[in-house]
Image (cartoon, rainbow, N blue to C red):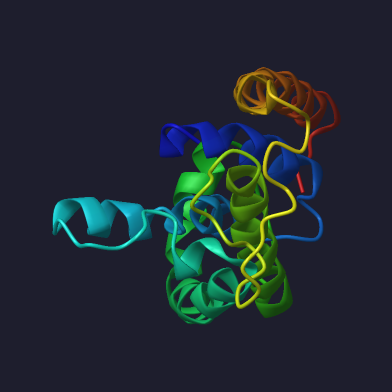
Length: 171
């Protein structure tokens, strides 16, 4: 993505749809944490590709361990924030782990279609996903991300209205 926030569109919509099987805040963070790699490379002017090891599925898997451990400890402190948005979830280690893996994988999948410096299947050197949808792939991905934001808000509003109508929280 040209900007990390674009990843939030697909993350939000998938997160709200998969609320019963993934941990929502972990999933959002997992979709963003992968971009610490290019931020650090740019910040410290390192002579490395912007989309290096952690922009591979193997690298994303490596990131899931510290994210899983961190979220396992701090997740309960995020409940008050979740309640503000009327999203209530039971904390589960399996949901946190699944969200960590799925979130980083989604980020890598989207980026691998538009960045020539990526090797998503590292240690293999190829990127068979690059320009998967032809020369307009970049535009399609951006439109998909923006539309995902809109779809999320629609689904979210419906969930909130339903929870008020039936007196239950979103799960």
